[in-house]
Amino acid sequence: MSRVVWGACLLVASTAFVACADSGQTAAVARLASGEVAVSGTPEGIPAHAPARFEFGTEASATRVAMWDIDVRPDGEGLPPGSGSVAQGREVYNVYCVACHGPTGMEGPNDRLVDSEQWDDVPSTRTVGNYWPHATTLYDYIRKAMPQLTPGILSDDQVYAVIAYILWMNEIVPEDTVLDAETLPAVVMPARDKFVVDDRVGGTGPVR
Amino acid sequence: MPRDGRSKLSRRAWITTTSGVIAAGLVKTQTDAIKLVAQEAPSDPTRVPGKLVSELGGRAPAEEPKRLVRAQALSSSSRTPLADLMGTITPADLHFERHHAGVPDIRLEDHELLVHGMVERPMVFRMSDLMRYPQVSRIQFLECSGNGGGVYNRDRMPTEVTVQALDGLLSTSEWTGVAVSTILREVGVRRGASWILAEGSDAAVMSRSVPLDKVMEDSMLAYGQNGERIRPEQGYPLRLFNPGYEGNTSVKWLRRIEVTDQPTHTRDETSKYTDPLGDGTVRQFSLAMDAKSVITFPSYPYALPETGWWEIRGLAWSGRGRITRVEVSTDGGGTWVDAALQGPIMEKSTVRFRHLFDWNGRDTVILSRATDETGYVQPTVEQLWDARGTRTSYHQNHQRAWKIARTGEVTFGLGELV
Image 1: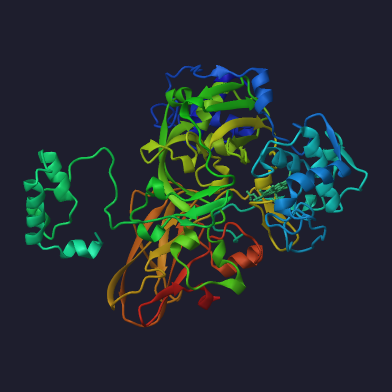
Image 2: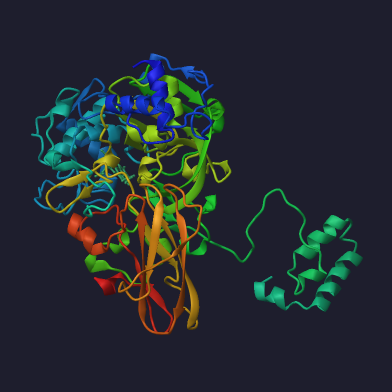
C-alpha cells in the first residue's frame, strides 16, 4: 500500500466511515478527488500540512515485541514451546486453581469451568466444556489472568498441563493427552460451530 | 456538630461564641477569623463572610451522590447515580466502573504503548509522545453491554429497582486523546489487516479484538476525561475509547495494540459478551450499542408528593449515531408524544429529554422510546424476546416503564406490561 493512498484514506476516515480495504480505499480516493470531503482544518483530521510521519515515539525492537506479544490465536499463533499432560495438569489444578473453582471444576466459588452436557437451543451454563468455541482461548486467558491473585505464576508447561486437565474434566480430550503448540489448536471444541457474527445493523428493518 | 444543631444555632449565640474565641486571642489574622466563622452554617449567610478560595473544590456538604457498588471483589462493578445527575455529563468520580482484576496503580512516566503486528514500523510510545500528536476531543457515552440485564428475565422482573441499579453502567464524558487513525498512520498499516487486538496492563491483561474499520473511523486513545487526566478507574493513563461500542471493548490501561488479519477470540469475546439466541446459535462480536432511553425522573424510589405539573426527564443515546427523536407515553404505551430534546445532539452521545406532564392523581405507567438517525426505534421487551429469545445477558435496550401509583409512589413497571 503506498503511503500517499494510505494517507488519503486516513484523512477521509476521520470525517466519515470508510473501510480502508481495497474497495473502500478506492472509494475514499474517488471522494477525495471529487472534492466531496473536506480534508484539512477539520478538528479531528490531520491537517494538510502535517508531515507523513511525526516520528514521536521510538521503533520497537524485535525483543521488545516478543516480550509483550503474549496473546494466542485460534490458529495457534502465539503459543510458546513446551507441553503438559492431563496428569501433570491435575497437580497444577489442585495447587493453584481448586480453591476458587472447586474439586471437579463445578463447585466454585468462582466461575464454573466444567460442564460436558451439550445443548440444542440455549445453554443452561456457559462453560469451557459446552460454550467456549476455541481451546486456544484457555491459553491466552490463563497465562494472562489466572490464578486470579497471582497471575503469571505458572510456567508455559504448567499452562499446557492445566488446560489438558480442564479439557479432560470436560470430556473433550482423553486422559493420555499431551498438549503443545501443535495439539492445542487442533482440539475441536463442541460449541465451535454455534458462533455466528452479529447481524444487527440498526435501521428500520426487523429487530434482531 | 449535627446538621440540624447547626441550623438551630441562633445568631446571637453564634456571635457570642465567636467573640469569645477572638477575645481569647485564638484568632490572630483575618484568615483565621474567616476560617472560624466558615465552620458554622449561619442562619443568614448575608451577615457572615464566606469561605476563602481553595486549591481543590468539593461538593456542598449535603450533596452526597455515590456509585452503587456491586461487590467488593477484584472482578466487579459500580454504577452511576443517573437519577442524581442533571444534563448529560457524568462527573468523573461518579463514572461507572467495571474491572476484571482491580484498578492497577500505574505511573504516567512509566507507561508505554506498543503498536505492532501487521505494520511497517512497530513502535513504542510514551505518554509524552502520545500527547504531542494532533489531539481530538469528543463528548460521548460509554455503556457496558450488560446494562439493563436486571429487567430482561420474564420470571424475575423487579419492581423496586432504581435507575442506578438498572442502567447505571452508563456514563458520558468529554474524552480527549489522539485518534487511533493518527497512530496507525504513523506506524503504517500493512495490506490485508482487518482487526486490532487491544490489551490492558491490569492484572487480568484484559484484551479485546476490534475491527480495523471501526478504530479507523472514530476510535481514540484517550488520556483526558472531562478536562482532566483520565481517572485511574477509567484507565489512567491511557485507554482505548470506541464510541458507541460495548464498554468492554474500550480497553483500559492500554499497553498494546496488535494489528492483525483476524480476531483473537479472547475470553471476553467468547465466554463473555456473546449472546445465545435460543435457536442453537451464539451471536459473537455484537459490538454496537443500539438506541436506548430511560426516564430518570420520576423513578423508583421517588414518590410524587402531589398532583399537577411534573417534568418527566431522562436520557437517550445510540451507538449508531445521533438520537433524532424521543417519545414519551404517560398512559402505558397507548399514546405517544414527542419529548423536547436538549441540544446539542451529538453523535454516540447521551441526549437529555424532557416532557411536561400534568399528573391527575390516577394510576398510570410512563415510558420512553428513542429513535436514532438510522431510523431504528427502541424496541419493546417482547420484540427482543422474539428476536433473541429470553436467555441473552447483554444488549438489553428495550423500553423501560415506570408505574405511578395513586399514592404518587413510583416503581419499575415493565412487569405490568408483559
